[in-house]
Length: 454
Image 1 (spheres, one colour):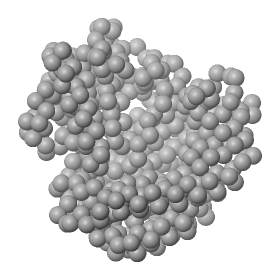
Image 2 (image 1 turned 60 degrees about the vertical axis):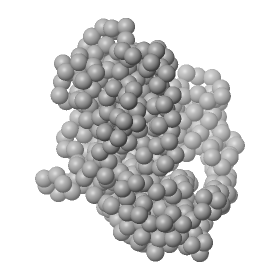
Image 3 (image 1 turned 135 degrees about the vertical axis):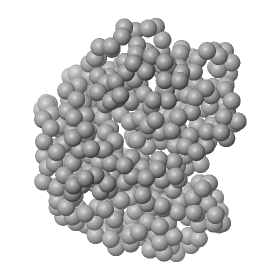
Image 4 (image 1 turned 90 degrees about the horizontal axis):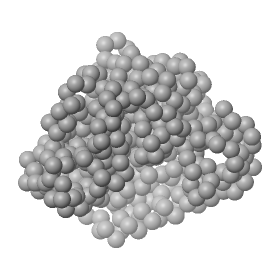
């Protein structure tokens, strides 16, 4: 699951149950959108008992770090951040320092020895543990989803967001040989559909216009619930909520990306024309050793069917290069697949062994220099593909949900999740704006507002 932050938009603050208590919290988040959603709930809880957000950790009365270990680079960043906070903790020993996220699960004793200045470790989504350092939280309702601040989420700019993440299924039942997530987030657990719909309704009442449904394997939703519910049913239920302008979901597994789900997307008003479907490798033998449970042909068929059913759909995927045993010929199969399919976005990663996974027992036999070369080769390929694809968008007009400003221009995304920067003198935060494209680059589009807003 790739990470993209929710950006602050139109001012809209809900009242706390308590007046500001003069205390501030600082939250640092790395990793996937599930972590972003967990951090939003922690922020809502602290706001409900009177804390205020600060973007300066030096001013904080509590610091919470939300960690990721899906790649070695992410784990190293968390360790570096924790070490950098040791000095602050010595200056402010009364300030609780908290670590959550995937780094914590089944690692608490080792982490306590490694980072003795951390006051509290708690597993992903185990929010009740925060009461140990913030006793006032014991007075909150058991249903965290009922917190007003969660539906009118205050962001770093002190405004509320029009985009929100909604976890619908936790954990993962797949055991991909390289992935640590199932060991850290457990087996799949779907949330009741009625609870999710209520959450979306409350978000919309707080100004949210775009909802992204989340799961490590989001299209496995519902298999563990009574009845015959699935992701397609949930998409229809959320689409029926008045005020939901855009509906997305990630991350999907090709095995569960059924024609029913794709047909449902194609028929819904709010479902965005964007498919995020990780393939990871283009060689079937590498996929088998990754334990991905599908073939290259199946992934291609799902993409082809999506393009057939949804005109103008954009496609994103994930690729790992340098998996143990991957030969140059097998890597070129991945290169050939990406060149043939022409994705709009490719999230590239160099393989790094994760302790506790099956592949960590194998020799990491692709040298780092070769991993880097393969990574760069695919980056260059993707730059060429995106240059061609975005070039065809010149002169077209797209609906953009405005998320903020970047270098003096408004910034937002199309329904196809393409980043657009544009000029317009009006106040447009949180608006849906029709933008005509006047310039293209491989990574984003530049345009001008046409005057139409919603």
